[in-house]
Amino acid sequence: MTILDRSEWYDIARETNWTPTFVTEEELFPEVMTGGLGVTRDKWEKYDEPYKTSYPEYVKIQREKDAGAYSVKAALERNKLFETADPGWISILKSHYGGLALGEYAAMSAEARMTRFGPAPGMRNMATFGMLDENRHTQLQLYFPHEHCSKDRQFDWAVKAYHTNEWAAIATRRMVDDLFLGRDAISIAIMLTFAFETGFTNMQFLGLSSDAAEVGDYTFSSLISSIQTDESRHAQIGGPALEVLIANGKKAEAERMVYQGIAGAWRLFCVLTGPSMDYNTPLAHRKHSFKEFMQEWIIGQFERSLIDLGLDLPWYWDKLVAEFDYMHHAYQLGLWYWRPTIWWNPAAGVTPDERDWLEEKYPGWNDTFGKCWDVIIENVVAGRMDKTYPETLPILCNMSQLPICAIPGNGWNVKDYPLEYQGRTYHFNSEIDRWMFQQSPERYRDHMSLVDRLLAGQIQPPDIGGILKYMNIAPGECGDDAHKYAWADAYRVNPFSKSAA
Amino acid sequence: MSQLPIISNFQGDFLLQLVLGDSEGTINSLAEAAAYHSVGRRVAPQPGKVIRVRRQGETGFYKPDAKVSDTDIKAMDCLEFVFSDPDKK
Ligand SMILES: [Fe+2]
Ligand SMILES: [Fe+2]
Image 1 (tube, rainbow over the protein chains, first blue to last red):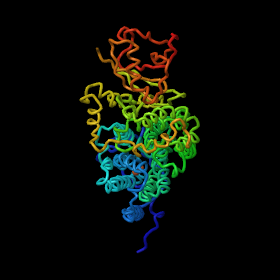
Image 2: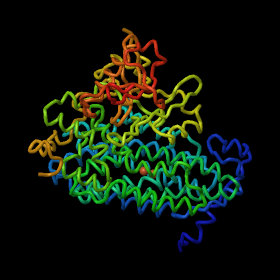
Image 3: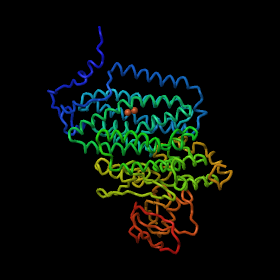
Image 4: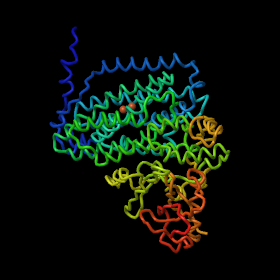
């Protein structure tokens, strides 16, 4: 028997749609789940996914990819990377697994929504593979950290993080709920696959992969680059959906969804990838700065794909691009200073050499962020450790749930962006976060930040002990400085010099 | 004493923080409460300067010896704490 080439049958198979007779079209694809924006079924059938594959082809390739990732892991299990790698690198692994493993699981649900409720046959087909991809990503990223749990219980947060009220976990879960779980199929195609995946997953999954190879962590490098090959395929679900919307007079609605997706994704990658690249990755192994990666992928590539589709750049584009210079430095200060409240041990990343690198990559760093670190370094060197730990909470943005922060020192521009809505005052980190809230206030209005919960008496006792308990941070899981403050030795030699002796 | 939570935006610091003030205390004592969580932690002390308090977006400062409950400051207002020369009003 001759087997037809895929190209000979694919289009017919893909365009096979059915006409419901027992129920109406509207009952089969309710607007609340599909989000087709009134574009009719024949128009959605024009949806043309750029990446075509069949189930047998998919299974064959995925099987090879999985075999590759697992065999690299098995081969390197005894190479003692865990004992010899820089502790800053180990922290990247912990923040990555805790922050993303179960986010992949949520992405699987989102893909499943497109599989069932996507209005175009081609979209449903692509999303079926996407759903299987995300299942693979979840399982891989729960399994890989598991071997480390017996040595270091912070790795248990790969499974645990999303089930806690730890603040970074709340922030991540909020974003995932908003963009992945709580949306209709078309919004997911645009916000998750187009904005989040085309725009941003490169940052963590390709950018960090090259750093991992530099560090010698080939297990992690092959794992996340294997994942990224799936992302770059199923991320293509969104583009053709945008084309259908634009061709049918829905450009404004499409843009609004793209802008919301970018705003949500940016905050997560800023707090996760930014400090990983510019502070936790050992200096000798940094290939590019976070900003350089952002310029290449967000301005160089993603901006291009927006323009190619005929979309206008978001109204906030200049503000977002300006944040590349400072936002993740501010998050890093927050992560390090509030280190007992996170599940990994952040590297300070401020030795004299590292500061020179930061100053070179971000001119003015010493005069701004460096001013805060000067005080911290003085305290560490003088043994005033109590002054290096927090005794209160940051004000958390009512959109991102991350600290409201910006540039300190001589560039001080920290500001609240408040909004009165139905008798409650909300606080935001930027105009972008406030705009996001205003797009659908009824969606966000009842959520309480950790600070709101503290003030409402939900956290008892209302002190650091009570807060850690509320965050489910058990003894032995609290973050502390990755290098046990050894980096401060450079300043003990000559405390008055900020340059390497 | 009656606790009053406010949002502290302290000059030179990198974030907004929750600070518990005393509504029966003075503006000066509120400034001290805010300074406790910033100065000597991430903000260098500025000897010889005083810390003045203003509402975000305003240029005028509250009187240092005013009682907080006599001002228009409400719970969770965002206040700026700024180093200033002692004689400057
Ligand atoms: Fe994924
Ligand atoms: Fe994905």
